[in-house]
Length: 250
Image 1: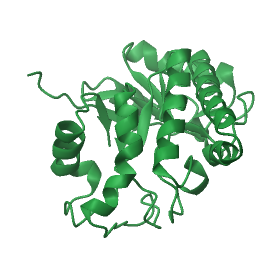
Image 2: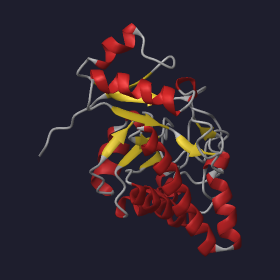
Image 3: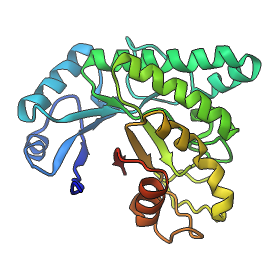
Image 4: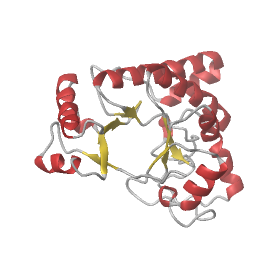
């Protein structure tokens, strides 16, 4: 058995590296960066920033959240992508067109990010749309089976472009109202009520999903700890029960 290895992804304050950030990137515990809108002006500036990162650590992973809709960190000249919920609405009218749109959305997003020098975009969102204030339009659909079908199309599009997909937020953030960036979120459902939300992740794992991002939601009827810090959710459910052997991002 290969021992698990953990690395830290850090954020950057601006459009070029500070002296402190240069120091951080030299630490062996730091495996890369997550970029945000504050780090992007245009492709030239971003290329210079990524070159600075690579100069310090050629193996650093450069990541971003470029989902489309309300979460699209990089603006023009990147394509303004529609929210994933728009794909779900198209699917309701025409399933074949919805699946094609999911594939094309994933392929276009990944192609543009790779062209900019970004290694990974944390996509697609595999949460089932419910009451969440932070998920909402970011989710593909309210039906787990539709999310599963469209999610697999999206992953295929990303893979076609040459980018590994990151499914999020395991085991599902759609059924809690709170935004965990701002406040604690607790999902009080039983395991049998939560299990349906796992369907998109199960399908994506079967489809070759490379990485999973955990939810910072607490599901006290399953585990007292938030999922991102839970041996039950990560070890017993994701790893053992679902057979996922890829990267876990928390």
